[in-house]
Length: 291
Ligand code: SIN
Image (cartoon, rainbow, N blue to C red; front, side, top):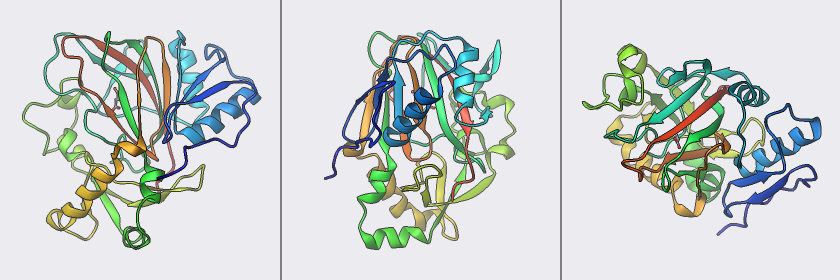
């Protein structure tokens, strides 16, 4: 049991409505089409720090305004596996047509691209087309997941590093029927097989709070241990981090813009809209090396 997440910030410029006791908040009374004044920006940063996932309904902004907002959070990078928006290559897109078959991008709980040395700090995503129902994104608060562990488990994890790799996504272990919403064929498999280690418990660069930093898509084992030896504890952590108590689920609407903290959260695209199209564009903001 934990108290509902509550920001200590007083919001005067924006209206903030928390979504669940665990994380997530809707923000209104702001127009993202224009550069933000200092006070509004400070309040948005505070809401983002405290709620980890913030979304702004009804923001029909240009790609340039989208990028300008994202750059206030840090340098925008492009991920190797996602297609760029043709007219604005710094923005990338996840597009699923109504007749698409097979897996939906991001349908397993994960944190984005932790196989990178400096994985994304946050993602700024806007919906261009949404199904009439379904296609939500679920998020989980990894501070709460860490804080719920016993002292002995925290001590055990503090000495471990996770081995992160994109091998199953676009390396030599990718499935026989890869997801065609990704641009796998253009990527060299040896890129996907690269390994990088990050601590299993990291400290957030902004809040200073500890969170669990392993995920089912990219972490194959603990450093210095075999996959077989690592599996029981990793499987426990993956399931623990996705407990419903730590989560929220965001319903998308056209022109809704959402920013998620890609360090202290998991997310998962819900694959429940077969036969309908869904199209989102996203800017990925680089973060420091996790420590
Ligand atoms: C992702 O996993 O990066 C995409 C999430 C979504 O499309 O909702």
